[in-house]
Length: 198
Image (cartoon, rainbow, N blue to C red; front, side, top):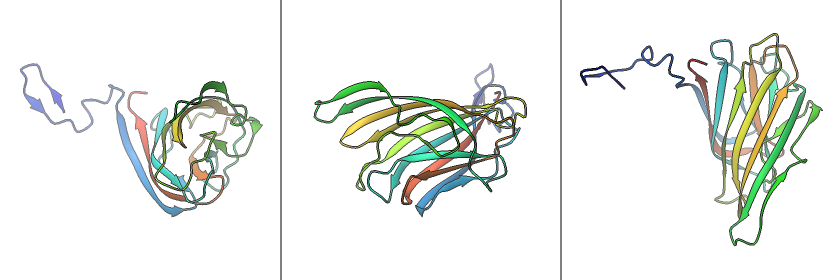
């Protein structure tokens, strides 16, 4: 909702805030013992930044890691070459362990495989994962495709993993797939937003 100068409320149908950098929900998918969640539409030249939100992502298998990859052919293949860097902050529930470290197990050097978003998998119980992934200018046919993720995970301690990198392609990225390294996505929702004014 927006307000005009005399305090009268006006409904905002999108035009009022077009330049304010707001989020536009493009699609939403909820897993139910799903092998993966793939977004094969909605990633185009409409926005220069796309944001994915992961909400209560939960695996069917114990200790497996959540990961993603990009496609330049509408989802026929998820194999974009990536170079990434990662670090994590850790703190145990019993306060017996805490660390901030570079996570070499998460980084890729011109790898085409799926990029992990967390270092540790979670057990198959009430714990889950959450976070965000930002993808910048995926429709560019001039530049590589930068991305940044910020995710939190629970496994008798809290973990925050931050990953940044780029898809080393000048082809337009037009699809994204999320999956676990093994097993299914037992539960959880992923939302895709475009960012206005970007």
